[in-house]
Image (spheres, rainbow, N blue to C red):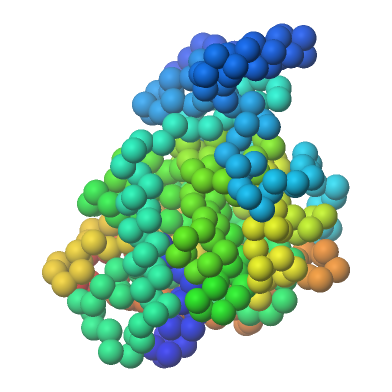
Length: 406
């Protein structure tokens, strides 16, 4: 366990088979897409919103997925992207990337059962009006970790509201990768969350630049794919998914913030996703399994414009029960790392991209594990890297217990 001062440095930037159904598919020719675009221009001239070109797809999860014209997505409203040259796909992928054979080429999400978006559009999940303020609260709490010393923080202090079980690596990087075991841990209280993700970071405390991606569970108890970014230490810039201008999505099959179709079960089938963030033509691309999803333009950042200096893999929860009984919100699978495969959640094939654009395995001995409350949530680095798992670790825990009362 690292000392308090070491934790302060490493966590200063951390935040915040069902019966087959008949699918309704939307498939339009290029002529039809052009017709819709012309119609959209006419609609806009009459003063109506033309960004959403097609009726929303109602999902079994209760979400609505809108198919939005690619050029009308929120990213291009960002002032720094006014003259941005769009990159529709990465020119290449760094060599020696390790993929897990159990990962499908394409990520399946529940909304796919309701249809698909046509060419020249991207799927955007409609967000509820109360979501963004809640997220902003989380990230303000994370920011508190940057501005206060943890030396005087007690277990009941608000500075401890975010709890982590992570592995850290410092250096100079052009990307990061991992195979992440997907679970649906219980989130006990409204406003809390449980996350398994990768952080790509650079910059001093007050101006931290970060890109984040992985899976996240909120009080709705659904595991969702998400991305996040900030360029000023979680103060005024950045957001989740496409909730503000910034991240440019190019993929019409992935809906950020929408539930993942399959999750792992205890002592049964395991589900993984491959998360890869890497530099290409100056931009930072996100790849999920074998699908490029989109990118963070380098112009969004100052310290991440060229490279990252910190990479972190692992889990996070938000505990709203500060000062009282500890939350029962789980991390990972909700079980401790000591239970091992099929029972505890894991990260495998942990890699970084060097300055030559080559994926390199992270040596297990160079990863620094940290758990803010090991009696509640812990991490266990594995010394055996054989068997196709590469550098790997188990993480997580149940939250409240006799050993984790508060």
